[in-house]
Image (cartoon, rainbow, N blue to C red; front, side):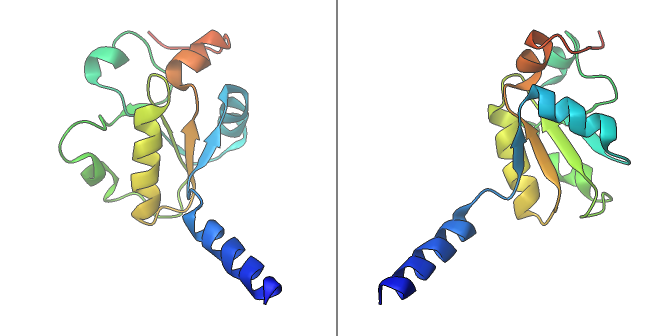
Length: 124
């Protein structure tokens, strides 16, 4: 009985686990350097992006209507890397993408500010 209960509890926790992967700035940068054919998405508002961004990113504002429509033509197995200012909005966006069936979704914990604080290059 104990064995059954443990298996049941473990299975439930696996189902509740996040579908996206959270990466700190160092791991996010390393993944971007080795990944091929990824989509790097800045989910901040346009005014925030104008202050600086990670080079190569596209801006799809998480707070704008139709955020998910931006991904209509993106294959479900394409790696998608998302970030915002500090990690909150991008975590929500990553969860939405995972729920929509995208298999490889990566969230930058600490966001753009963490990236910048780590001394990684930014585009102005």
